[in-house]
Image 1 (cartoon, rainbow, N blue to C red):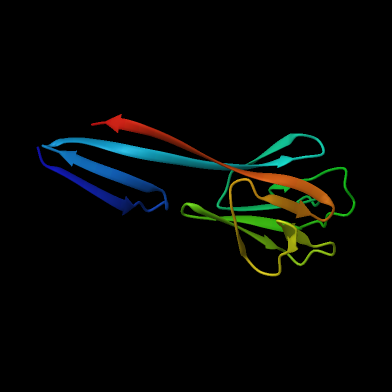
Image 2 (tube, rainbow, N blue to C red):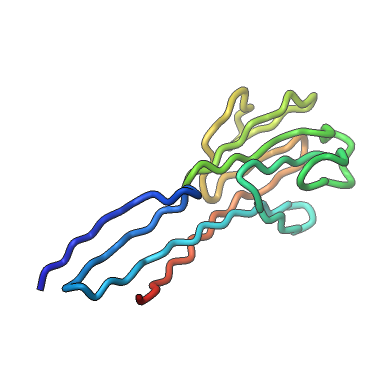
Length: 134
């Protein structure tokens, strides 16, 4: 029985693992989602776009209410393929990752603590793996 494993990138940057076993092909898919957990309120903020902005203004993807220390356009979370990054947007009260002020686009990992001004968030990545038969 011959088995060949390939990994290819799709146009939308999600990865597929293709397995061909004696012409019985199956596709293993991995769905990757991320969210922030606002620690003060236990609010869950789903990261729904490849470039997801947060702040207290009206033009951001997610408006953080109840904290005047947060800028109108404070921070952006960027998804590139399977990786996530955080970038401060020139905010007055800064953004911190794992306790260190970020000054440029910085990788963010599952379980990292993100501090936006004086508000703490937990960054969570969930990988949902499933197999689809053809």
